[in-house]
Image 1 (cartoon, rainbow, N blue to C red):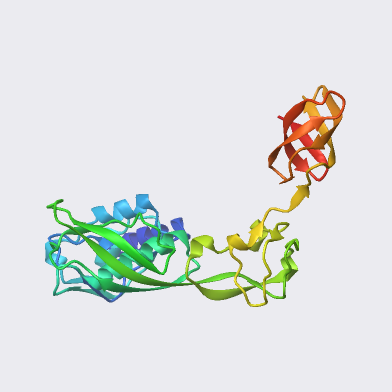
Image 2 (cartoon, rainbow, N blue to C red; image 1 turned 120 degrees about the horizontal axis):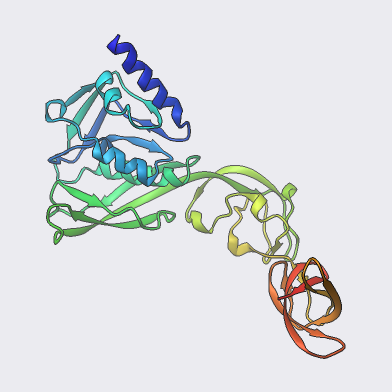
Length: 296
């Protein structure tokens, strides 16, 4: 009966949040810490800060510090709302050095996967400090979109003891790729792109979804097979300097339209200066669509 209830609780937590996946391998290396938590050993997808904090509070008992059975892991995880993949038995291995490179790699991957569950990530640790204590904390609040990153690391029991971890990251992700040549000034349409999995050297500058840039203009010549970068495009210019526009002002109950001359060029959403043809006064107006602005 107890086994049945434990199984029921475990099944409930598995399906309570399909977005979060926690995987515990059959063998895992960690630093020789005084306390080991589930956060130190788990491989995660979509792990948020709140759930990470909960996992840090789940400390493995000293009596189970080397091996744990699946039922024992499930019991520890019963309060966590996620989908679990657990081994029949977990073997915990301590690294010889004070910093397990495998543990660092795992934690960097978990952070990246929390922001991009569809990515494939490879992490290689280039260097770790040699004078660090085994109880340490890694600062993951850095830009992990680049191929080479430097992360601060500090001893948790001696904050004066600090250092740096250098990691090389390879990130593979499905992104829009140019399917045919695009000339400068061309307006982007969906049929200009295919979606392919590519290695990204700086994901922050890479367009992730083509829907977000449809209607923008190319500002440089783009060739087939090229990954689209934000630096390649700009908003489509729908207003030219000197163009006559319809300018609206007032409320929904009483609205007035006047003719005006654009004093600046701009795109939809931009605020530009316009000049009233009759009074010659200059106003600030937001571009609503081609040929239409609203006075702010």
